[in-house]
Amino acid sequence: MNDSITQIFGILMTAAAGVLAIWEYRAWRGYYGDNFLLTRRRLRRRLLIAGVLAGFGVLLGLEGTGVIPIRDPRLFLAYAASMLLLSVVLLILAGADFVDTVKHASTESLRELERSLQPPTDDESPSADNETSH
Image 1 (tube, rainbow, N blue to C red):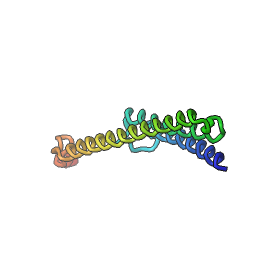
Image 2: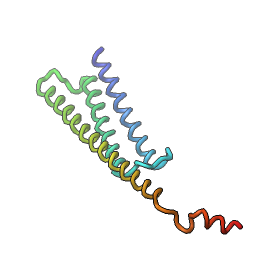
Image 3: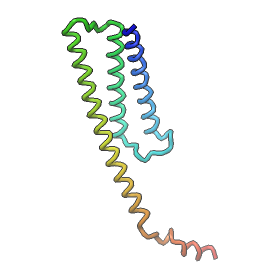
Image 4: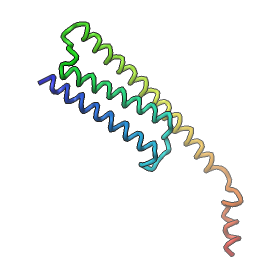
């Protein structure tokens, strides 16, 4: 019973990683409207995160089906080491994504604030609109 749950969880995790990759690509292409934080760098990082999650799912699925016999101590050590390595890579990617997203959001917010505080140009001034409408 435990192996079938592991296999099902592996399949679900791999499918969720695929959905995440498709979602990020569609967001980057502009299907969802707001492109405020969408950069090529973020897309690559998020696709890598989806790949790492798919790697987790594949490893779980293979272990659940018995393809990876974890009863052998050496194979169990290799399995555990690969799961640990994927965990470390996932944490590094998630941390980098967080830092880069905060940095990009703050930079864009400051630019937008600077634009809103600049005085209007001749084309945008309300008096220029009033003069042309009379």
